[in-house]
Length: 278
Image 1 (cartoon, rainbow, N blue to C red):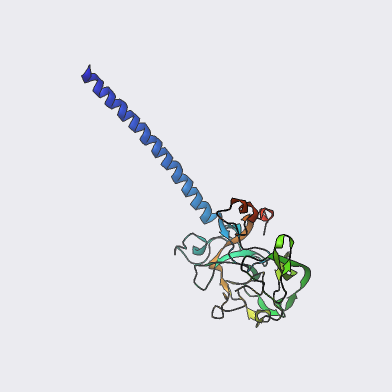
Image 2: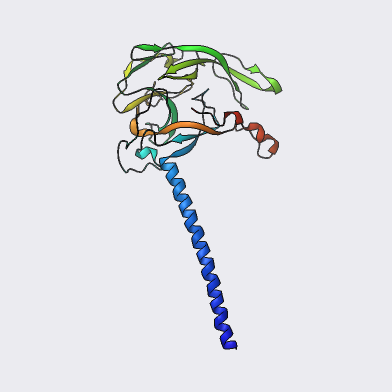
């Protein structure tokens, strides 16, 4: 009987091991498929980005998280993760429209992500005159609207000449002049922190073929196409550097939460911004 028991126990053990191996293999297959789908979505459909600076105020705040669509402009090496040198130029897709908010790899290093608004298309003649965009000889008007009020972060300060204003709870606010600008059938808000700032008046330039002229909505706090790379800007943005079109904010936080104080976690969420389309 002992001779029969040993093979039976061994067979049962091997069967259990086979079942465990099959469960592990199935889990690995599911995980691999999930990872492949996530990478595929990130490479070809949408990719999440966060906003680290104030160059796109008041449209985007530092601490906004948004989805960027990959397919509208087609695909280039820079729209793919890690920018593999698989091909030059763009494949499929359409050209951006004036007024689109786009993410691109800055021509400074072809690695760092920037987000700006498209102002000029290839062949357009663009310059700034007294803080106004002049496009193909036509000045794009700015219509004054309510000031933009921005809470001052701890240790921070306001730009421009206007002093901070107090608000409820001891919070101090920066007050910036806000204007509405309409371009390409789209109306959006821009800020003017300083009157007579050097980027308010720029030489007339013609956007080269295969390039775009971009600007930040916070006109006095944005490194963009108004300045060359040598002058601290980004110059004209090559079409192949486009990553995608900014679509919608899916999360937003002021970033002032204190890790050791859970009561501050919810206070920093800006839920009213979630679902904002750009």
